[in-house]
Length: 222
Image (cartoon, rainbow, N blue to C red; front, side, top):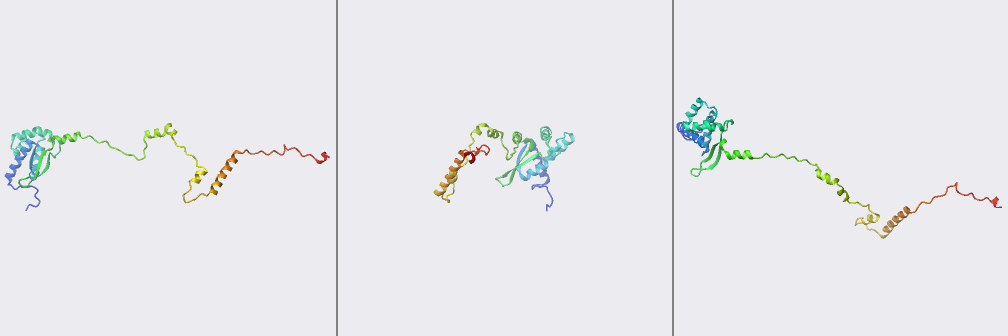
């Protein structure tokens, strides 16, 4: 049983599996992306990423170690040349796996494995995306333009003058349930007329007691 064993044997013997992963690693380094099954892509990622980390330091010892895995002078030249310059600032995660669906022949799950730093389309979209400006909303704020319009003299001149209601308006504004009789209407009209007459009539001044002439005595008349 295979309890606790993480490596996928891929249905092959050890020499066959190592040779297959070496050939796939060479194709990935030279072509920058290949299409294979999902199981093989996951095993290839574990196989090639330690080699890419060693290629950052160009020494004879690292070249000999990587050559023991790849066994290709052309791949070694490309790996220590352009590839090492691309991945110099990246700390791991050099490859990306993208699932493509099932294959028509045997319905196997296929995937695209590529070097991350060589996907020019994805890098261009990330750099060209503009940063969105943050918006803040404040409730109850009044704009300056609205305040100026409200305080302008033209708006004040157009203000509506509210007139005080008269007695007739108050009588007419009664509810439909209340009936206005002629007696009530005449009484309200008479009270209004009496109030207007009282305002227009001048007050009469009473003469003072000192200015009044004394009445003639009866003795003087006799």
